[in-house]
Length: 305
Image 1 (tube, rainbow, N blue to C red):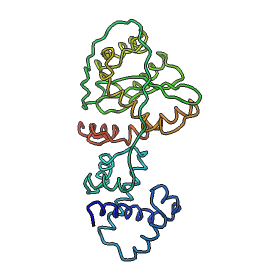
Image 2 (spheres, rainbow, N blue to C red):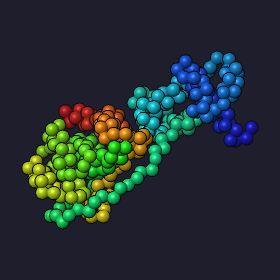
Image 3 (cartoon, rainbow, N blue to C red):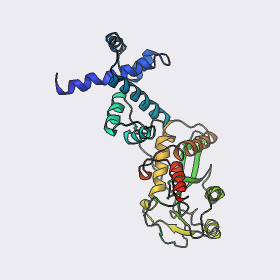
């Protein structure tokens, strides 16, 4: 047998075993079609599989099922590193390489669409602010540095604008607001949302780009009232606000671009559900040791206590 033949013969076995385990939940024909194997091949394998399973085969079946469930539960956006972290949290002792191999055999791959960037409108002249953060986005204590930005979401009804604030210490989205406009009132609402649940100490840093909303007199006065230091990116350097840009890229790839959104109200519900129930609570971040923002904050508070 040639070197590549073993892999070609091993791949269908894991898939066939998965189909057998879920035969009562889904039709055989549908699973074969989705997993790209033939019905005749499955039934031929089933006929041969009369001998009792070895302990290793049994364990691999259970592991394959657990990997599949973890992939689906996390919206199909996790690659092998995050699935491996998910298994470790469930006390599975398995290497990331084995997880990657089994995901490949099961046809599980996080392949989001390409991101579409839209150019923002130019800001009007304003008072200049120093870049205090200076691209030093380090995980640490919470309520010290918040970053903010606005992004655009297309719906069949029209544009939906999302303003968000992230706590750099935990990568948690602490405030957000959505509307069919991008006036200053939108980012004010997002900030007030964040301040209603978080109480940063005097001197905390608010970092954003130099968009006209963030440089407006109303917004900067609100920040000064809340005892914030105002930090802004340099013009033409989106990397100065990389964490916020990354979040907006992530929510579009993992949520927005995966479906057609008919109404603005539908878009609002979709975004809020993603932020509250998936991104903040479940989505694992490599920079947080593969914990979610909420898990990281709970762990940080326990350590501090």
